[in-house]
Amino acid sequence: MSSKTPYKVLCVCLGNICRSPTAEVVLRHFCDKQQLNTIIDSAGTSNYHPGKAPDARSQKHALQRGYDLSSLRARQLKLHDFIEFDLILAMDHENLSDIETLLAQAHSEYGISQIRAKIALMSEYDQTYPKQALPDPYYGGADGFERVLDQCESSSLAWVGIFKQQFKQQIDVK
Ligand code: 4NP
Image (cartoon, rainbow, N blue to C red; front, top):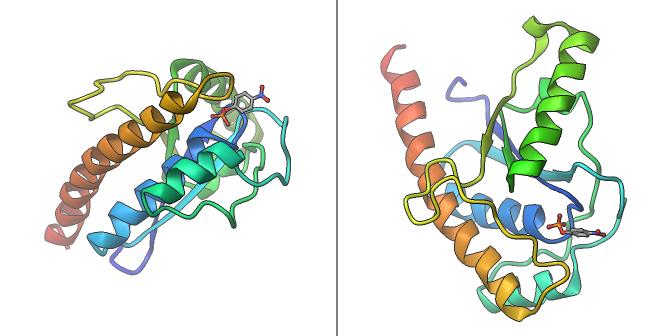
């Protein structure tokens, strides 16, 4: 990353209508607050809800904390994302495994040298939810959507700490 090139992060869950859109908006909020030069997006490993807005319950709970998810639209993770993005964040371990399978396909399709993306769990550096899955709230109640927000805020703050170190090192070696 140069100081002019944004660092691109893709948040990925199963449906791209509950967890990853929430992660996208929360992570963007904390990165913007620290004026980090980032672009944040989200996608799903499935194609269950292409073009759909985030789940109404995710939107409602997020808005109660000031996060507006209404303009987002679901899309499926694609092989080209491994070339476009610097970091792909999996919301749970099954997502991580599915992303790794696609990464192997991207290697064959484009060649290893073309692949930019590193892959990690959303909770990778989170001290409160260390390497824990972001539980899928889709079939549950209101507390599940609150948990998604709590965990996205906590994990996003941890990532912002990592990005600040990473970007500072890149500036220092120039
Ligand atoms: P997400 O939640 O992966 O957090 O977007 C889900 C949304 C939809 C389904 C499953 C999980 N579904 O089975 O349709």
